[in-house]
Image (cartoon, rainbow, N blue to C red):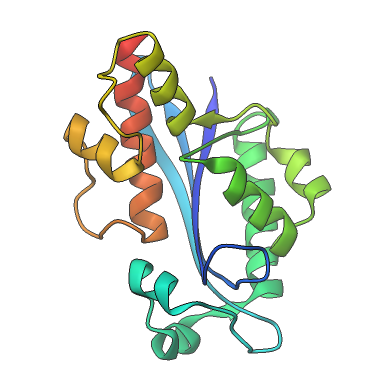
Amino acid sequence: MDRFIALDIETGGIGDDKSLLTACFILAKRADDGEIQIIDSLNLKIKPEDGIYHVTAESLGINHIDLKQHDKDAITEREAGQKLYERLKTWYTMSGSTKLIPVGHNVAFDIRRVTNTLVSRGSWDSFVSYRVLDTCTIAQFLKMTNKLPNSLTCSLVNLGDYFNCHPLGGKPHEAEYDTLLALNVLETLMTYV
């Protein structure tokens, strides 16, 4: 049975020079009835090794991260990378040594930041498949096949609104909320094919 690693990150802005602030990883599987079931999760609050954050006011306005409080709760990039590596290894073993399928919304960006900041690309590729399930790409395809309205914008929040599948608790642009929403959207999108 396929196991998914759903993920989302929040950063201090657009660009590789901006700080990685939070990351959420959820191990999930698809049950026989088609429902996606969560098995385990890892939520990380992250601070730069040197303690110097590179952020924009606009990004903090979107993700509502209070840097002062964040810094008190956060662990360094190195510590976060070690936690992620250990969890990936465990999840890979739990999956019968089958690579985990990454799931997310515009997930290539998230994977790139994770492999640039937390774990090496080689370590990631040891446990995670290069075959991704991107909810944005799937929704765009379904729009092209007229299974979704052409007027629908494919942002994660808009898809959640359209499918009425927002998770309880949290808010958009929080890593855990967006990861759960991407799983909910994926589960709904699977009913369209």
